[in-house]
Length: 131
Image 1 (cartoon, one colour):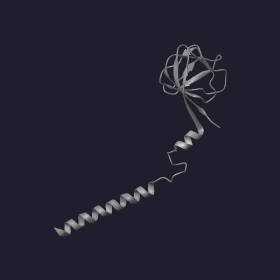
Image 2: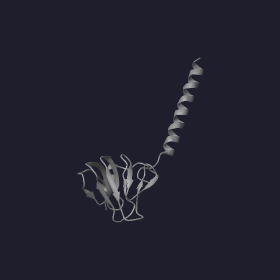
Image 3: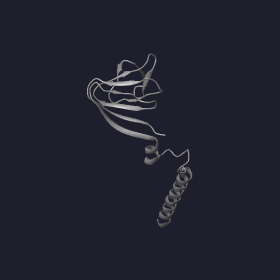
Image 4: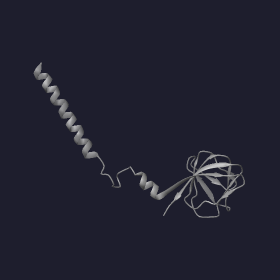
Protein backbone atom coordinates (compact mmCIF):
# COMPACT_ATOMS: atom_id res chain seq x y z
CA UNK A 1 0.00 0.00 0.00
CA UNK A 2 2.83 2.36 0.91
CA UNK A 3 4.58 1.66 -2.41
CA UNK A 4 1.38 2.47 -4.37
CA UNK A 5 0.91 5.72 -2.46
CA UNK A 6 4.52 6.74 -3.17
CA UNK A 7 4.07 5.96 -6.86
CA UNK A 8 0.89 8.07 -7.09
CA UNK A 9 2.53 10.94 -5.21
CA UNK A 10 5.57 10.77 -7.50
CA UNK A 11 3.34 10.82 -10.59
CA UNK A 12 1.41 13.83 -9.29
CA UNK A 13 4.62 15.78 -8.60
CA UNK A 14 5.94 14.85 -12.04
CA UNK A 15 2.73 15.99 -13.72
CA UNK A 16 2.77 19.28 -11.81
CA UNK A 17 6.43 19.87 -12.73
CA UNK A 18 5.64 19.26 -16.41
CA UNK A 19 2.65 21.64 -16.27
CA UNK A 20 4.78 24.40 -14.69
CA UNK A 21 7.51 23.86 -17.28
CA UNK A 22 5.05 24.00 -20.20
CA UNK A 23 3.44 27.13 -18.73
CA UNK A 24 6.83 28.82 -18.29
CA UNK A 25 7.90 27.97 -21.85
CA UNK A 26 4.67 29.22 -23.39
CA UNK A 27 4.56 32.50 -21.42
CA UNK A 28 4.96 35.62 -23.50
CA UNK A 29 7.73 38.05 -22.77
CA UNK A 30 6.32 41.34 -21.41
CA UNK A 31 6.85 44.35 -23.64
CA UNK A 32 7.20 42.39 -26.87
CA UNK A 33 4.80 42.58 -29.82
CA UNK A 34 3.39 39.20 -28.75
CA UNK A 35 2.38 40.62 -25.34
CA UNK A 36 -1.38 41.37 -25.64
CA UNK A 37 -1.62 43.69 -22.64
CA UNK A 38 -1.05 47.43 -22.58
CA UNK A 39 -0.72 49.67 -19.57
CA UNK A 40 -3.10 52.46 -18.66
CA UNK A 41 -0.30 55.00 -19.08
CA UNK A 42 0.25 53.77 -22.66
CA UNK A 43 -3.43 54.21 -23.52
CA UNK A 44 -3.58 57.59 -21.75
CA UNK A 45 -0.57 58.76 -23.75
CA UNK A 46 -2.32 58.17 -27.08
CA UNK A 47 -5.99 58.74 -26.28
CA UNK A 48 -7.74 61.56 -24.48
CA UNK A 49 -11.20 60.69 -23.18
CA UNK A 50 -13.81 63.27 -22.36
CA UNK A 51 -17.47 63.43 -21.33
CA UNK A 52 -19.30 66.23 -23.09
CA UNK A 53 -22.74 67.74 -22.68
CA UNK A 54 -24.01 69.66 -25.69
CA UNK A 55 -26.91 72.06 -25.19
CA UNK A 56 -29.78 71.99 -27.68
CA UNK A 57 -28.92 73.61 -31.05
CA UNK A 58 -25.16 73.52 -30.37
CA UNK A 59 -22.62 72.21 -32.85
CA UNK A 60 -19.43 70.16 -32.60
CA UNK A 61 -16.79 69.86 -35.34
CA UNK A 62 -14.90 66.59 -34.73
CA UNK A 63 -11.47 65.94 -36.21
CA UNK A 64 -10.30 62.85 -38.07
CA UNK A 65 -9.95 59.82 -35.79
CA UNK A 66 -12.46 61.06 -33.22
CA UNK A 67 -14.41 58.26 -31.58
CA UNK A 68 -17.85 58.98 -30.13
CA UNK A 69 -20.51 57.27 -28.09
CA UNK A 70 -23.79 59.17 -27.81
CA UNK A 71 -25.16 58.36 -24.35
CA UNK A 72 -28.36 60.43 -24.33
CA UNK A 73 -30.17 63.07 -26.34
CA UNK A 74 -30.27 63.39 -30.10
CA UNK A 75 -27.27 64.21 -32.30
CA UNK A 76 -27.50 64.75 -36.06
CA UNK A 77 -24.58 64.02 -38.38
CA UNK A 78 -23.96 66.55 -41.14
CA UNK A 79 -21.18 66.35 -43.73
CA UNK A 80 -20.48 67.10 -47.39
CA UNK A 81 -22.03 64.78 -49.96
CA UNK A 82 -20.34 61.39 -50.07
CA UNK A 83 -18.74 61.66 -46.61
CA UNK A 84 -19.77 59.09 -44.01
CA UNK A 85 -19.16 58.18 -40.39
CA UNK A 86 -18.40 54.61 -39.37
CA UNK A 87 -20.62 52.81 -36.85
CA UNK A 88 -18.24 50.19 -35.45
CA UNK A 89 -20.94 48.62 -33.27
CA UNK A 90 -23.32 47.90 -36.17
CA UNK A 91 -20.57 47.46 -38.79
CA UNK A 92 -22.01 50.01 -41.21
CA UNK A 93 -21.54 53.54 -42.51
CA UNK A 94 -23.78 56.41 -41.46
CA UNK A 95 -24.56 58.95 -44.15
CA UNK A 96 -24.95 62.68 -43.66
CA UNK A 97 -28.35 63.84 -42.45
CA UNK A 98 -28.80 60.88 -40.10
CA UNK A 99 -29.36 60.94 -36.35
CA UNK A 100 -26.63 59.04 -34.53
CA UNK A 101 -27.66 55.89 -32.62
CA UNK A 102 -27.32 55.76 -28.84
CA UNK A 103 -24.61 53.63 -27.24
CA UNK A 104 -22.80 52.82 -30.50
CA UNK A 105 -19.06 53.34 -30.99
CA UNK A 106 -18.73 55.77 -33.90
CA UNK A 107 -15.58 57.03 -35.63
CA UNK A 108 -14.80 59.94 -37.93
CA UNK A 109 -12.65 58.27 -40.61
CA UNK A 110 -11.04 61.25 -42.33
CA UNK A 111 -10.76 65.00 -42.35
CA UNK A 112 -13.63 66.91 -43.83
CA UNK A 113 -16.29 69.38 -42.93
CA UNK A 114 -18.02 67.10 -40.41
CA UNK A 115 -20.55 68.65 -38.03
CA UNK A 116 -22.56 67.15 -35.22
CA UNK A 117 -25.65 69.15 -34.25
CA UNK A 118 -27.51 68.57 -31.01
CA UNK A 119 -31.27 68.61 -31.52
CA UNK A 120 -31.77 68.62 -27.75
CA UNK A 121 -29.46 68.36 -24.74
CA UNK A 122 -27.04 65.54 -25.57
CA UNK A 123 -24.41 63.74 -23.53
CA UNK A 124 -21.60 61.92 -25.32
CA UNK A 125 -18.23 60.34 -24.69
CA UNK A 126 -15.51 61.41 -27.08
CA UNK A 127 -11.91 60.39 -27.54
CA UNK A 128 -9.39 61.53 -30.07
CA UNK A 129 -5.82 60.71 -30.93
CA UNK A 130 -3.16 62.72 -29.17
CA UNK A 131 0.21 63.33 -30.73
